[in-house]
Image 1 (tube, helix red, strand yellow):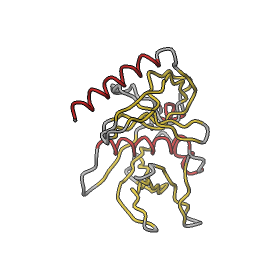
Image 2: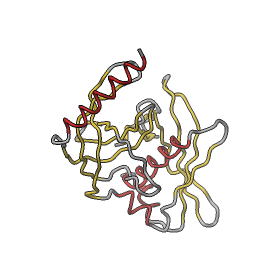
Image 3: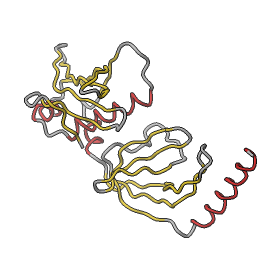
Image 4: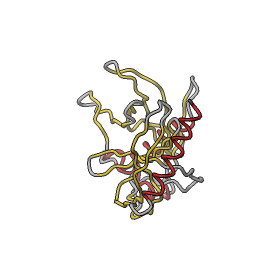
Length: 217
């Protein structure tokens, strides 16, 4: 039965591949993240107000992956996917992409103070998740409208560090990030507290005055 199902999946996939050759689509989107999840790699983008996942089979070499906030043109087609549950699903499969416009994160990383380090203790942290957190922090620094963040982006005599721990607020588990700037003399000061919800993978900045978390986009 298992062999028969695999054979059926193979036939469906071959037919699907042949049928979509003349049906390639393309559209513009803003890159969010690349996520290895289960059997498939997910290439996540923002299209307007919607977050869309594309399946993407290729692996990135170091430095090839776009950064959150980059504007891309995506070339894709609809594909039939065989899931482990035995069901077939339609999904958008990304064939390739081209860069239209680099986001602000690129300019920040090219600066003299554009290095971001991380620090954590305790439990093991998945390397992919750490990379995901680092990309969120870089995006936040590059796009934040907070005056304190903007001032420090212009200061070439500091380095950026974020400390990682886990907290629970209102029965929701968060990864908390303490964003710190360190001066050449060694003095360090906290400039912002950030929270990431591992479930929806969204970033929130802590508003001290209102004592609440604000969604950051």
